[in-house]
Length: 280
Image (cartoon, rainbow, N blue to C red; front, side, top):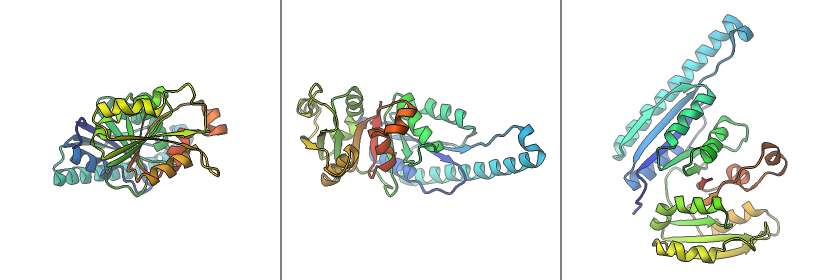
């Protein structure tokens, strides 16, 4: 039984490109299993270009495109409400049309008063949806579940915690407790060889704490794969464990450093194969 989750927010940004997403159906499935309230933000991305740059004809084209995208978002919101009603989920929907900065602020306002947010994965680091994910991770103060393609429903009977003893991993583990308690099996996974963990809290010390919370937990420490990186190693181990959810802290570096070096967080967001619960 999934207890402790009472309010779920899912955001879908309609940009008029007919992209297939799974966050909405995943969120609906989770809310149904948790008997939680679901809020759907089907936001339309509004394009705005100064009149001096495009003139009357350009403004007409922009207005037509904004109306088209707004209609698509409204259609999505209506469908979400119907699907929620059929599933017996109490649901509130909205379909605002906002420019990117105000859309992000509207989403963050909602995220801060929900137990968690759910968003579709976005592989392109410069895409609008990736910006929304990063804002949720680093500015909402709440956990986020990122849903990759092909995961239309919530299932987390088996969970892997990517553990490095950091504050971010600790926060993610604490925020994931409702899921950990409900899971049949949870594995604390530590990767050696990627960075020095000698001064970090080991997974073996986390395990008793989780056990006291009623979590069926085990511990595993493995080296980085010979022909892979830490993310490949985590995902390979999680697949071996048959995990339906991966729990990880989120780490933020400067944009320049991310561009030059990448990072575990960016790699998980770009190449993740299973739903990912993260927070910072």
